Length: 424
Image 1 (cartoon, one colour):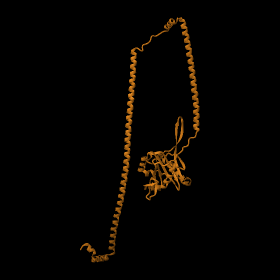
Image 2 (cartoon, one colour):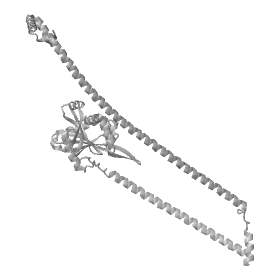
Image 3 (tube, helix red, strand yellow):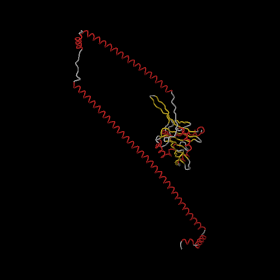
Image 4 (spheres, one colour):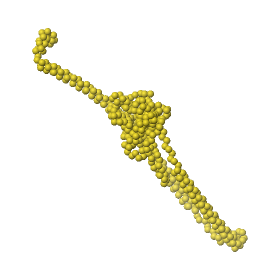
């Protein structure tokens, strides 16, 4: 009898049912426990298979991300190789130009030497021809004898006239010396008077400059601002003290929200000393972007290297105080590449001054999402609950905005469009 016939056999079914009825409670319990263990093992196998699939998916994503990073690194290496080739080419051109200049200078020097040798040969030729032969020397006695013979005058009269002429010449020479001495004295006197007047004018001008107040520094905001806030970092020598100064300004704005609505521009100044002649002059300078990133943050050089001098630490006030950052660049491509490679560490480091520990922890588990808003391409860090933490966008090819939420972006964009027309 086949297995199918056995299962459909009524007699067999009755026997099995009778056997189950004959089983004791303990045996029945063991059978159910065995069935439960079997089901539990199957569940564990299914769960393990699901975990394996998830791990496989994560591994594939990680491999894909690693491949993307490798491609970006290869791009950077290719650009660096191209730059090195261009630099090598420029050095070669410079060497060739220097060699050409040296050869031209050497040719000119040889020509001058040849001219000098030719001149010496001409002089020697003139000497050989006798053009430099000395003339016959005439004496006073010969001149007197010739004059007596020609003009028929006595020798004594000629001698008297000669003596008178010599005395007149001596008198004229003496007068010339006196006039020359007088002119020298007058010239020296005029020079001394001029120097004296110059000294008086210089002293007067120096005193006037000392009394003249130094011109105030005018900070031009990159985005239309309702107010300017200043921090003097001359005596803030370490990064922690500079961060505390920014936190203090942030806390003031939060405490007086109604009075600080709109955009606030926070900038930084430092005092330096310069020596002009014998005088020491104090100057006040506005901190540049690279100085700020070096002194106040731990942002990588790949980002700060391509940032221009102008930047802005801003605060947007409406229902809360939201910090934001604006940076300018003249190298959009490398600036954007730096953000693609290390955008999350850069953004979280900049905002770390103003965020509490909960938000910093939330940012650690966030990922970038791309979003288009008002025809602008935004990259926003989203938490696991899809909450916006921070993001960045290029307002134009030279202006980078780093903000907290999409609502902040829209309000800051309005202020930016008021400042200047957008050129994209």
